[in-house]
Length: 206
Image (cartoon, rainbow, N blue to C red):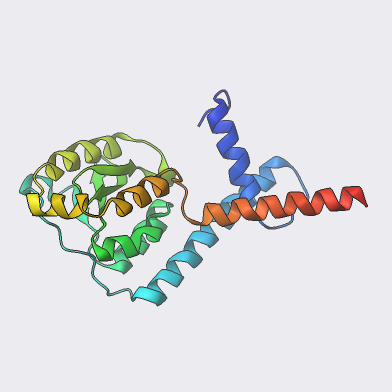
């Protein structure tokens, strides 16, 4: 992130505003509190998902095996527990995709290559939806994983692609979800921000 890029400044501001805890102090303290809040929120979300689905619940089987040459660098997340642990390890919201991974709407992977790590999501149409390093940052492992798994996805059997085309609603759902890379809880956070602003406005009016 760069303080010279408006997009990064807006992201940082919203990230801190997401925090629902009261804060008295400087912006550094608020940033630290926001980081802790987001981590706790993702941890709580993962715990709810494990409780609902069961940690041992398996994700959908891959439509085609991974090439042997990818074995050392690419790990398929085979269970709900694997997916949730990936989210904790990579500090991202991949746990929120566990249900979709179970029903076969997507396939989730951990990449470890050249001393860097990344998480990659492949849709059931064979195309990579997301690839990012820790905390949703771009790195070489994410770029490599995107390239290699996109190539792998080109080999999906025709029946898998036909099944995908037959359910366009899933595609639209995935597109809407992908617009929010921070996770499903961001919507609730935005609603909380609006509520806080409304409360502030009411107090100011009084």
